[in-house]
Length: 310
Image 1 (cartoon, helix red, strand yellow):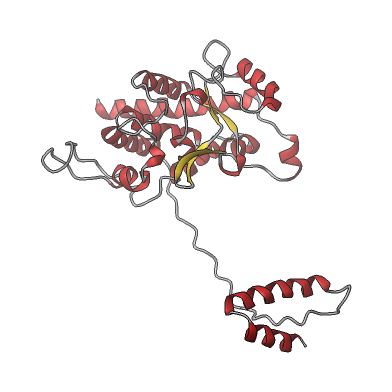
Image 2 (cartoon, rainbow, N blue to C red):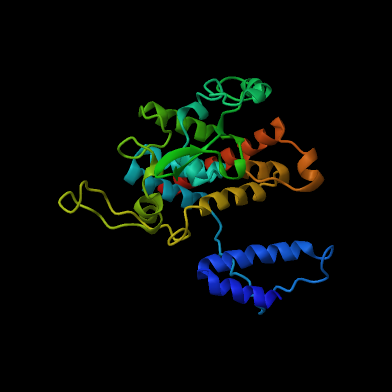
């Protein structure tokens, strides 16, 4: 009876419509098992084969010296905001679209006093943030991840961060100083503006900027392009690789320094399942420890670079 019905439908309806009808009818028959019928007569083609594991991307250790070279290349292309952009991603693990969409209201030194407070139900959190983060004695400098930018319906729009991973990211003193100095140098609403002052999310950042930052580029002279620039050295551990690996490297740094698993995953915008995720919270001591180890990495790098220069 099922086969006869399928043949009839195929003869009186267009192919696409007949396929939709039979799909819905098959769902109805599946739901009828086992209360109304013992088995479903729907015949399906089952694809069986040997499972092939997707090759895992090979990663290299993210060395501070490599991040510094990436940042210097970015400075050559984008100015000071490019330098700070790279170090912010390496130190916070923010996703690229979150960095593109970061505005002054949610960044040190303005935040949390300038928080837009979009959710009245989080009034307690807003008050707690003022007591915990900011600029001044006893407060920790921080960035608030409240949104990202993506294209929606043909226009660049603010959207919630991926998986709605709203979070606060403390930053070490060196990065707080870099961000503050950089923000004083421009008047764009974007923390990391494009060359024209607009949003980095409006351009293909990976192709236009990241590839020469990571892969290196030849010298350009004014007659060959709109502006001249020196040659950019390639960064071997990132050449040909994704910008997103800076985020992966940020997590590796936290793991290497032995921080709480919950604090690390919360910083990356992930949720831990089970009791661990329900009972745990990020404490001031954990945030202070993250700031401390990141600052120590920076200071060791400066000592290393100073020794090499000497």
